[in-house]
Image 1 (spheres, rainbow over the protein chains, first blue to last red):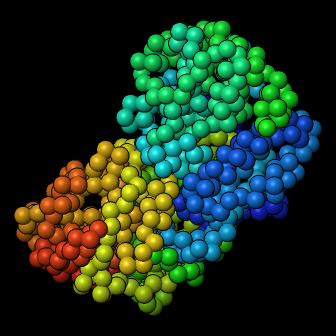
Image 2: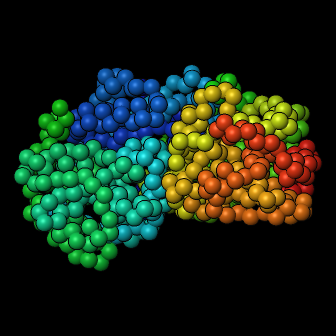
Image 3: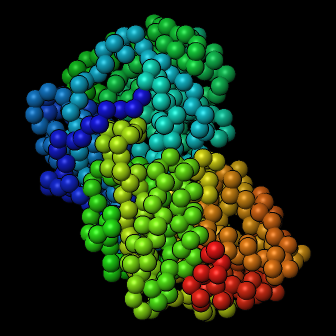
Length: 288
Length: 288
């Protein structure tokens, strides 16, 4: 699963085209910041409101200044402009380190980095036929202070991803140090058992994905009982359907988990159907 | 404990004076790298060999290319040049992200950042009289894959440090999610009980400090029984002496822990005495 080299076709720092950030940035020194990755269709960033809300929540939890959401929205829309598909990544850090060490001088000013990458769009075959997944050996550390956040401390994901060298594998599912099922390296996971839908509660670790929130929000309207709760290995084994979500890929059924064959069942298909207009339409409807 | 604003007086990127790094750097995007912070006396980086060995070990564990230790040594010595005291921080990241996402293209080339800061030297009063410390409320996540490393995922330390707003407090001692005593936000901790010395085993989290290794190595020669082992709250309560270590500060006795008064006892004083020539002499002797 070595990805092809791909570089952004646009790169802005603090609202202006630029290729570099200060070598003093606390994002570099400590991973002291957050990010969002957004799918864009014909210049429209999908679920932009949800992404910026999550960013604002993350800033509050890390003690970063509240972002100027209107200004960021304008910048994201501006860099996303143009026909076709693109991925826009937004990084917000606490800014340049004005003191030595972890402490703050109180004068830090956040850094905003925007990157636009080319994007081929969702993989229709993966959505239809499903993907192969393994269970990762790395166990995620648990810290409620960071749980759910899309922060810049992502070494666990880097190491877990490095375990997936088999190009046939789309993802590794990860457990936490206490034995809870959490998520994939870059996706959230949903299980179906007895027709009911569940996804791991992310109160100790994991990233609370935007697509996870969208899909969870669609379930009741589809007549599907849905719960966030602690899930463990036995729940994964008992699951009749398993699927992954991610802001870029929508819903991907798991067709093989560490050698076990699964089928994309009725709950997965119903949710894919309900999600389809939001994926195609820029997600503005679910974005209110 | 808001630190005064202090900026580096020299800044190099990849061996040349430069103030910026690529906005694509995986250090910024994922905290995908390591760092070292070194005390320098009259142009001599203290314990340089130990710092570079730890860096090489960390690179091996994260799957980063082995650093060119001789070249790095030359760069650190070069930026450290000059009379008086300085702090040199070295950051090594996996380099520019040549692919989107956590995976590697295989073509990444590490980034080296060197920063030199002014330094007033060790705080003699803190070494003599001791420092005030509290117990932090944040619990460190446990991940053996990252334990001991001085990696760039330091949000836990940033958040724990932000708890220490009282300028009288020098440090916060941190426990892990399973209840083990681990370290301070920027120091290692040693306990003395019944004349014997112990420091937390760092097999689940924490940073294995260079000064921790130096002090542990001095103990047998001082006739002090020393062990790395799991320590918990009851060990902290039972300790007759507690001290902190850090590459810049040497040994600092704890004179108050969350309201409890302690004295710098004979074990602490004997180790400070044994350490003194290494602190003053550039640490070359202990550096073999």
